[in-house]
Image (cartoon, rainbow over the protein chains, first blue to last red):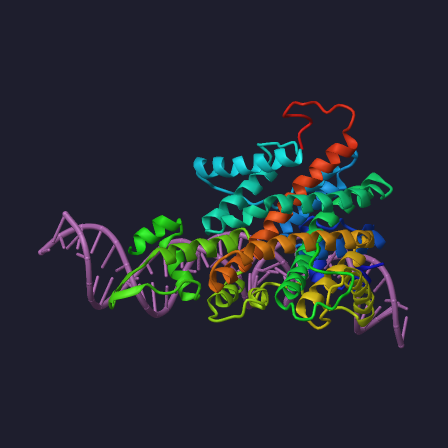
Length: 220
Length: 220
DNA sequence: CAGAAATGGATAGCGGAACTATCTATAATG
DNA sequence: CATTATAGATAGTTCCGCTATCCATTTCTG
C-alpha cells in the first residue's frame, strides 16, 4: 500500500499523514527505495487510533504522542499496564494554596478510606482529584461532593468492568492498547451515557404523570 | 470593587477579564461614570465559574458562552433544566456512513431497551453516542461495548445522584447553574475517579500476593 | 521508452483560539 | 496637581493543528 491508498483507507489527508509522521505519531513506511515507501494494515490501524484519540478523546498531538509511546513500550508487566497507559494522559493541573489542598485532601482521604482504596498522596491522579474538588468549592458548588461516594462507587463498578474486559485480551500489547483506548474513549462514552441518563432520570422524576408500568421504575 | 481588586480576587489578569467581557462571558460592571465601573461578588463568582469551565471542563470560549447563556436564561421549567443546561455543551460530531450508523444505532437501541430508557433517535446526544461507538469499532476495540450495560448502569446511578443533589438546591437559577457545573465538572470528577479506581482494581486483582502495607512501591 | 502522475522529504504558510499589550481619554487619589 | 487607575478600542502574540508548495526521484501509462 502506498501513500494515496493509506490516505483513502484511513480518511486522512496525505499532508496530514505526513505531518503525523513528522510528529512521531505514525512510524515511517518500509522504504523500498530512497523515496518510496510501503505501508501496511498496522499503519491504517494506527492512523485511526490517532484520529480517535484526537477527535473523540480530545487529546492534543503531544498527549497522543505520549500515549502511543506508552503503547509501544515493550515488555510491561500485566500489573502496571494501566499505570503505563495513564502516564501521558492529561491531568488537571492545580496551583492551589496549601489550605485548599489540605481541605480537599481530607475529603479524598475520607472517600478512599470508606472504599478501602489505597491512596498515593503524591500521585498526579490524586492531585487531579484535589484540583477538581477545589474547583468545585471555588465555584460555590461544594454540594456536588455530597455524592462523592456514589460517584466513587460508580467509578469502581466501571473500573471493574474495564479490567475484566481488558484482561480478556490476549497479548500484553493488546492489553496496553486496550487500556489506553478504554480509558480515553471510555471517558467520552461514559460522559455521553451520563447525559442520556440525566435526561432519562429527570423525565422519570418530574414528568411523573404516566410512569408506564414497565419493569423499570424510579427504583434504581 | 474596581478592576484591580476583581483581578486580584479572582486570580485572572486584567487584560483577560476585559477579553472575557468582550466575549460576553462576564457582564459589564455598573458604570459610575463614562469610564469607571464597579464590580461585585457576582462578578468574582462568574469569573471563577468561567475559569473552571475553561480549565477543568476543557470547554472553549464559545462553549462557555453558550453554557452561560443557558444559565442566564430566565424562567425555565424545572423539568427541562437539564435540557437547557446541555444545550451548548460540546457533543461528539460524527460523519459516518449509513451502515456504521445503523450498526451503532442497533446497539444503542438494545441498551436503551434493556434499561427502559426512552430513546430520542434524532437528539444530538444519541448522535454522540453513535459516534463514540463507531469510533470504538473503527479502532478495533469493539470489545469495550461488552461492558456497555455496566457503563449504562453506572451512568444511571450517577445521574440519579446528580438529580437528587441538584433538586435539593433552592431556586431555579441555582438548579440550572448546578446542573451545568455538575455536568461539566462532574465529568472531570468521574474521569479522575475512574482512573483511580483502575489503579485500585488492578492492584487488587493482580498484585494479590503481597499487600505490602507501605505507601510507596514500584511506583506508577 | 517518453511523458504524466505519484511519492518522500523538507519547508513555509495559514486560520483559529486564547490571550496580551498598547493607546487614549477620562477619573480617582494623595 | 502629579500620579495612578480605569474603560474601551485596537493591534499583536503564541500556540496548535493542519495545509500547501517545492523538488528530486520513482513508478505508472500509453
